[in-house]
Length: 198
Image (cartoon, rainbow, N blue to C red; front, side):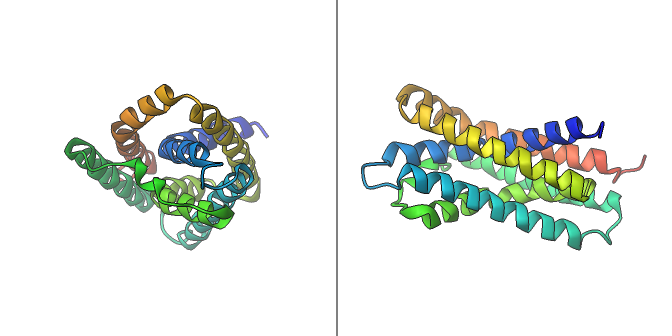
């Protein structure tokens, strides 16, 4: 079980870098709670359900890719790179706006929908991550780490929602930080896959 720590650290890192924008979304949801927005309980249930759906979709895709040689999985790294470049272009043009979540969201189903819609691009990281080490032990560790990280995200978002200055800073940096992280993660997927030899 010496591989538990590396798997847990990798899962925590993958969750963190792919959900920086989700922290902004959750903060916005908590900020509207009690003022027509979803209740705290609905936010928590919806967030867990949304992340669970994203993980399930990633596992299904990873299993479907078992027949594909490891080195060709590196091509999946192109998707987060493209998404990252697009995000940087939108940020430069002022088009990236996490406030799109300000649209009325009601109940846990609405929160789950927002989570899946906002996290659809996370699949480009989760699929190669799960495909690299797809077994019951690694999957159990990854799911457990994601469950803990969702709890951390919910707590952090609830605390941030009470501090407008912190939320504003996250809004300001999230537009360029998230795309850069996606580009780096995509490059890592390509390099570690051995796509270009090795």
